[in-house]
Image (cartoon, rainbow, N blue to C red; front, side, top):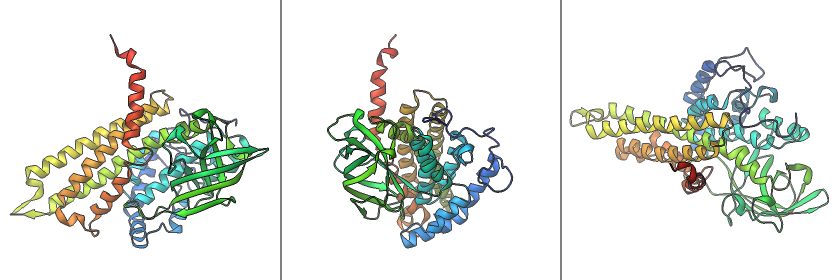
Length: 410
């Protein structure tokens, strides 16, 4: 295979059909997608909830959760069969993600990141890099943290982390923070710029070993939601990185980050908003049918029933846009990037409205940690930052809107 073997149109779509992808996990007979969906649903509603209780109690993701997800084939769902993955087409994978999102935020985060980061690496990987990095990620043998965000810079081309080249080695200096799984990983997929350059043309994507000398790794404080997922603050001081660990050429860094990971990842996060909203809605509907006040269940009170009706319509509308964006990405459409931002923006705002109403249906009791809606409400807030804030999504959408303004006149 040559560098750039997988495009948006082909990545994760090598299964025979959308309805009957082979298991691809190395065990058992081929399974239908319906079987796979039932398996994920059984995990989320059973073992997943027990893991959630442990994570909330201990404040950390137990190592055996990673092992369990790997053995079930959940870390290789979206990768193609020839890479050892299960070959689930992207739009069908999102239906699985919709279920994972109903689980604990850290479980969803693991599945989401691992099923997406191989694609970013693979986009410009040589055959040797594919062997060293991509296949082990798909197999669940190594963990890679997406390392873009910086404490002193904005998103994208505003990178301040820099590298200086000396022969076959880059010397990396600068800071990164809020790096998910950045403490407990094997590599950082890190984005920096060649010293002295400006803009996207000077950016590089590097596979930086976790044990590289010249780096200080600090675990950041616990977050409001998505408990258990570690986040790192990294400080590099001329840390040596082999030039052989660069993906693509100098200047390809942002394309690796944005095209290889962020576009499909934003769509996946948008679907996770849909899934978590469904969980909030389920809890609210159950509460409305069980809670009786002044002789009537809450479900018979118009204010409550109308709020939940609005939620139901909100969820379905967001889901339709997410799947539209997914199909456009699968088709290699040049509209996929802006549609991914639209899907993420709409889904995040939907999730905010749905979880707020769902918590209100529970009354004051929903504010207590003993109530399942409390965890859902906390986890939902994280989605507003993941893969770019709403303000970033609006910037992407507005830029596209005005770029095509001439086409809109008649």
